[in-house]
Length: 128
Image 1 (spheres, rainbow, N blue to C red):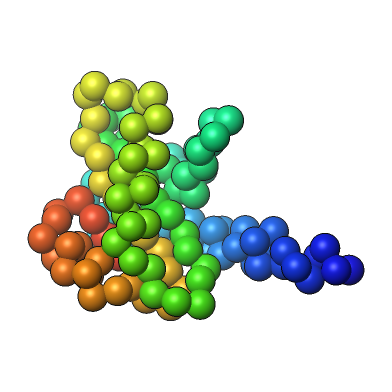
Image 2: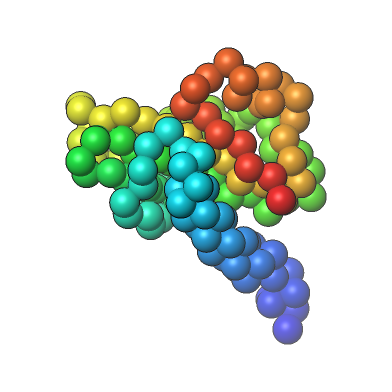
């Protein structure tokens, strides 16, 4: 019980939150609110890195790379920069793709991250 209580958010709630985020991604896709039409969505990982959401369109060579953050504080700009670094490990069409990024948050985003998202066409922020 102690192990479950100590890791409940990381091992249980955050996984459900990722499912909710993927479902919301499909809704955004259906409503044409993304920069391209996503055809496949999954998560991605290797031995050292994990990315919560990867959506691709094989026809257009677009890739959407996303993180789902179930935190009790606002998501800051460092989460985006870490995600861009992790995206380099994804081999799919590495030299011939257009990257887009999406961040999901339970509690919102810092002002710095919101300002950055307004300057970039390839970054979308979604808060619940």
